[in-house]
Length: 141
Image 1 (cartoon, rainbow, N blue to C red):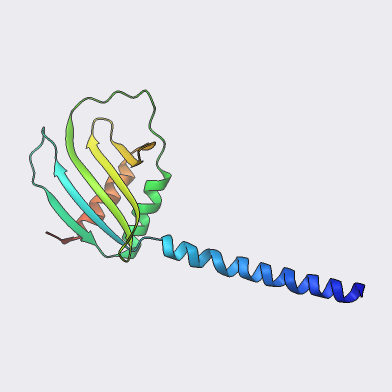
Image 2: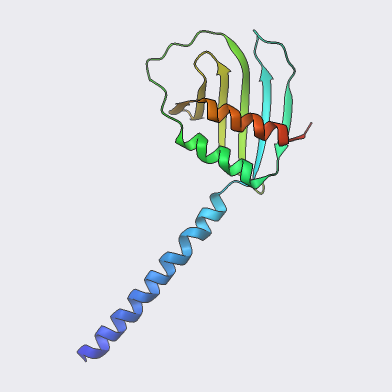
């Protein structure tokens, strides 16, 4: 009887372990963006035109997405001058489902808002990756 219980416990444990190993990548794949929509609005203080691009290169999209999530949190007491070069609305998508919506401001403080309570500070790598993605984008009206 003890041998049967141990065997049954081993089989159940292996089944749970197998299910745990297989399931996370399936969920991760569903949440990994493979498309990016970029809407750019020029600031009051800058020249330039509004644009809207769609980026279909999954590698470029995922690199920008991962870097965006790794940006440092912006200081809570930071005061930013109204100098604004451009405002970017980034929508990371997996097929047609939204994964993350980001508002990035290219200006004096360079805040990147992931949601209402999560504001980060952009770095030069973020802007480089965004410029690369925008250059690869297909104009969308």
